[in-house]
Image (cartoon, rainbow, N blue to C red; front, side):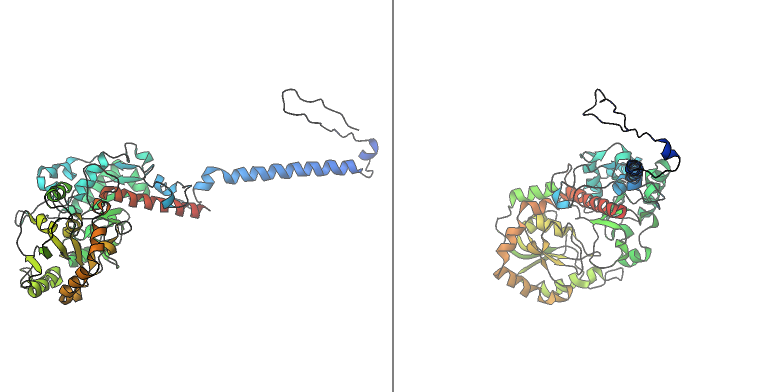
Amino acid sequence: MADLIKPVIGRRGFYVKMRFLHSNHHRHGKRFSSSHYNHFFFKCFKWFLWFFISVYFFISFPPFKTFSSSSSVVKSRSLVESSSSSSPSSIDLLKGLKIYIYELPAKYNGDWLKNERCKKHLFASEVAIHKALLESDVRTFDPNEADFFFVPVYVSCNFSTINGFPAIGHARTLISSAINLISSSFPFWNRTNGADHIFVASHDFGACFHTMENVAIEDGIMDGLKASIIIQTFGVQYNHPCQKAESVVVPPYVSPESVRSTLSRWPLNGRREIFAFFRGKMEVNPKNVSGRFYSKAIRTHIWRKYNNDRRFYLKRHRFPGYQSEIARSVFCLCPLGWAPWSPRLVESVALGCVPVIIADGIQLPFHDVVPWSDISLTVPENDIGKLGQILDHVAKTNLTEIQRNLWDPAVSRALLFNDQIEKGDATWQILRSLAGKLHMAHNKSRVSTQ
């Protein structure tokens, strides 16, 4: 028999509650009726359903989805958050990117600006990037929401009183001091061992902080930076001790103002009466006074073979207005110096002169967005003797197409640093690269969780 319970007021619909009444012969061990079996099955089903739902919500709780049981440190936001996007191409990578900039004592950066050259020379991207980030939308004043941490230490502004070139002998000491300061004053370095911290090393061999490759290789990357992200001008396509850290390869600094000033007088499509141009250090003998081979003797070979060739305009001495020579040239030679890269690469592109890259194994900046193979020539170091023939062949065949690709404004924009970030400029490209690393970290985190 069953009791009928009236519908409950205020609830959607109604329900009937069945209360089974047990007769005396049930209590005395008599055989159960079918209704008793139904009652027993219904109770078991309720307990099973309750257990299943409880387990589901337990394993779905956020701490179990976000962190693995083996995690021993608290990671930054950039390393633990998951992303709902399927690919970098389907989203605006810079949207939501946050970078915290440490406000360090002036001895690490501001004091160096007393020398005007600090923000104008070929290594000045360390200053330009810092300045652009300070006024950018990606800057956050809340370190707890940061994806990355920027450490503004200028190491290339210590100019030698002997030759006037940047001297970076103090770099390791200065950077170690900055790391000690931020690791003892803030909790963010220690939680990732600096893996989400960014430094700029915009000189010859980047994170190795030495101007001579043999010494740079021997010293290697200092221990404090091995886990960090290095923005550096040095990059090669083979294994190298100075690249054994997460890095973003960037162009050397060339003043956008100087480029605009030159183009106002010599436009891209103007007359280019110089066939092949180079101005810079060219040793008459392979070994200089230090006894070392500068440019692996490549520049010496160029000078010896083509100095008397009328097609080549080669000058060994400095000239303040040399950008006008680039703007009037068809081909601009970009041989390696001590390191593979050279500011001539950026100046040539920005002023519409086809760069002739002579540096085996060089990794070019932003190669995923700058179509280097369509805007430049790459000549192996061993083919210097054929350089004249190579340039003649290109001039007679596909020079017009190369120049059309080269003169695309987006190409030069990607290689120039502005005081304030402009979409597509060099600092913007750095942020795009960082956002790409962040996206990859999200995907790895999501795969690891699954």
